[in-house]
Image (cartoon, rainbow, N blue to C red; front, side, top):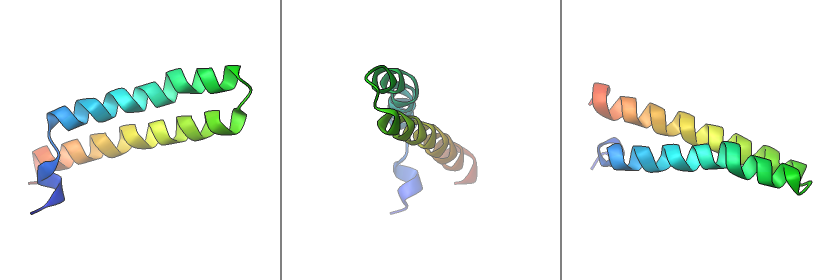
Length: 64
């Protein structure tokens, strides 16, 4: 079974929500608590989630 076919819209919405939460909400909370390294890691992981989920969504819709 191809892993791209397992990726559907519900998973896409979940990943987008998680990416936005990590990028904006957790980043502010970590920065407020003076955890700069964790804030940077949170923003980086959130952006990667957004990019990865968008890429998989387009691949599952248009490529296969």
